[in-house]
Image 1 (cartoon, rainbow, N blue to C red):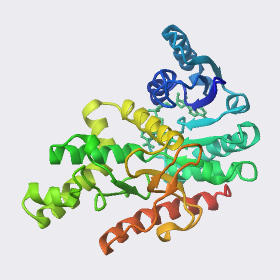
Image 2 (image 1 turned 120 degrees about the horizontal axis):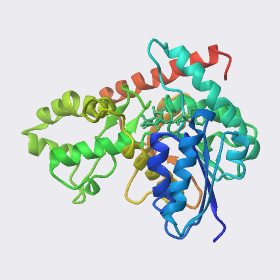
Image 3 (image 1 turned 180 degrees about the vertical axis):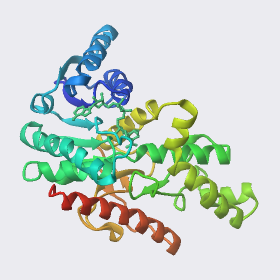
Length: 339
Ligand code: NAX
């Protein structure tokens, strides 16, 4: 339809917000036929930066962009929203304990979840980018419950997924687009498990076979995965900060666009990764927001967990370790009285 789709970005005055909004307005997220109305939510200190970005959006004269509103009022920001991208969060400052970080973010994602439940479109879908993303999504979903089904809340692990694909493409000297069915399991944190055991190439060869061929045998492939690949993907954020002098911005925005696009329009080849509310799949406790293999058929169906994949004992242990961390975060938030 030609009725504009309302997309709300929180943290619209920040780095990732800035990298997101121009691509969304250009049609990279919802396609070339969907007009978009952007809403940028900020806190008072961030308003000028968001207003400046809105001026630049106007200067792009995007044909698809029906308008931009900048506000520091969550109820105005989420009114009628169809797609909410929750990017703004409280970063960890020096000396901050994990409990303090969770509490500070609960103070953001609780009220925002509540506002979404109160005023967003009934068909709203939410992706949380701001860290700790999984648990922030859990808090937002709980705060909207009664108004919006919790499965409409997801968290971003697509950046981790894309990082894993990028590493494999380099190691195998193939195009990134040739690699399908990589899976990120667990938390968007250093405990995540990037799993290549289901990944395949276009000729049907598995990524494990291709790695063994290239690296000189199965043992060498396993050693590379354990000692190089998994830690590099899990710590890529720190590597980017070290090399670039600033955290991941364009790649994070790109991943958020991939996440929403595939959820809305459908996954193309095979499965991807997203953190979604567990219904107990793979033994992950119900209600946790955990990264799983997912697909979407588009047409507003949302992401579905791909069930029935085989996990060997080592893979199970890695998934369990990351899920334990999610349980600990949930319990810490509960003990604050938030859930
Ligand atoms: P910036 O500090 O550049 O921007 C954050 C913006 O959010 C600021 O302008 C701030 O004023 C605003 N903000 C803070 N509280 C707000 C609130 N209650 N309502 C609305 N706006 C609010 O950070 P940026 O580099 O854009 O990163 C944003 C978040 O993404 C961080 O939490 C970061 O940790 C997280 N990331 C998550 C990733 C993922 O894969 N899930 C990867 C990239 C990134 O590290």
